[in-house]
Length: 246
Image (cartoon, rainbow, N blue to C red):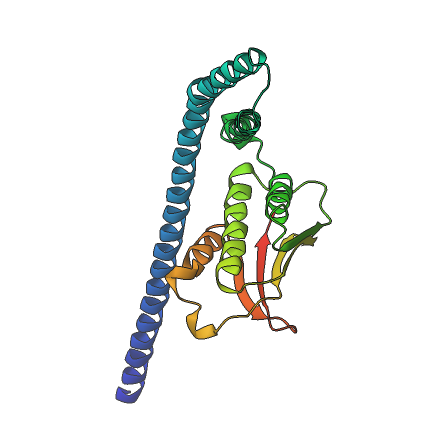
């Protein structure tokens, strides 16, 4: 009888411990989910603040600096018409002003609220690739099989920043001749690979803040995806990103 009583008491204690541990695990999981949700909300808030700042900056550039450059270009044109022979330096100055105005207008458009709300990762990545290739120092290619990316504008902006960080890391540290960016859908997962033929990397250095690795990891985690780095068969580096999408 006493043995049975101790057995029952032992079982009760074991069940109490098991129940306590389950509740503790559930509590810790809830805390983890709340922390992740807080970080996501904080990141979205930062993005909204950045968008508002960029929109304001774009308007100021267009209204203030753009008008000043246009007025200066007009004065240069008037001066050219009044000269019997226009010197080459003045022609170059006029061409430089025209280029500056075009770049400023493009920057103003890219900072507008409408542009941010309608942000397209594919289109802006094409523009980034063209800009880098214009230097003729490195060849960047971009391939994809997507007609439209099934993501809202904010996640697309964040993913674009991750890709930019990966490219800049490659240019700064790997000294590649070529970078290949590929993006495709596999079911409900977006697969993104950024590979180069550069000097590769040491895995022991992957936590270095200077390489921007933690920033890329943090942004990918906030998007609910995964990111890791591999050495390619040619000895370069490949950044692999998997992002679940609805």
